[in-house]
Each structure stands twice: as structure tokens, then as C-alpha cells.
Length: 126
Image (cartoon, rainbow, N blue to C red; front, side):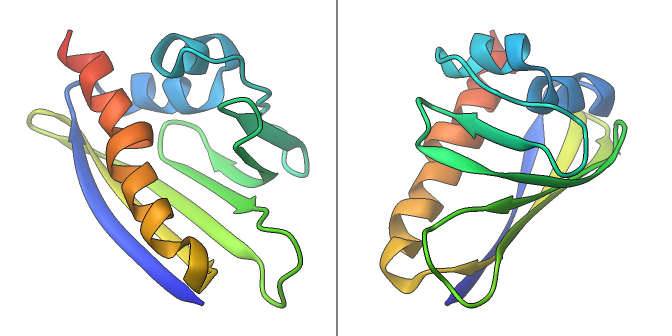
């Protein structure tokens, strides 16, 4: 198992970024795919035609999202924590993803940088 930590800068305030990550209709705008999402702790979510599935654990509106991402059978849960901080250019995003299966690590890092936050960066650059 591996962990991944990265920072991103998005050209929008933290409240907007939070909505882009938690409202299904806004997620669809930047991913181009339908999403199932709720800010109810314990609810399950899916994005990118169920390429990403998991359970929502904790939310602090405009500041933090904590989710468990499913990778099939594994001993320790894979936890994604996204923290949003005000930044002079909009929002500084702190991403921490723990317990990524070794065989999924490279694809996961690429997915975070290109598909997930790459799409969000492009969305706010328009």
C-alpha cells in the first residue's frame, strides 16, 4: 500500500470548489459524466461511470471532504482527504490519499493529476 499527497491551485474560491466536488450536477459539468454524490456522512458515491466508488465519511462545508475509496478486498481502507484553503489565486487544495494498492498507484496518481484535478483546473481556467 502507498500514500499520495499533492497540492493544486484552482482559480475559484474554496466555497465554489467545495460545491464542484460535492454537488452531482456541478460534478457532471467538469467531468462530463453523471455522478452520484451527497454530503451525508455514510452515503455512497460514484463518479466517471463508476470508475470511482466509495463512501462519504466527513464534510466541513467549504473546507474539507473525507471519503473512503473502494478497491475491492483490502485490509485497510483507502482514505481520501481533500482540504480547501483560501489562496491569492483562489483555492489551494491539499490532497492526501492513503492506502492505495501498489498495483493501482501509478494509475491513481495519473488520474488525480490529469482527470480529476486536471479537469477541475481546466474547468476554472475557462
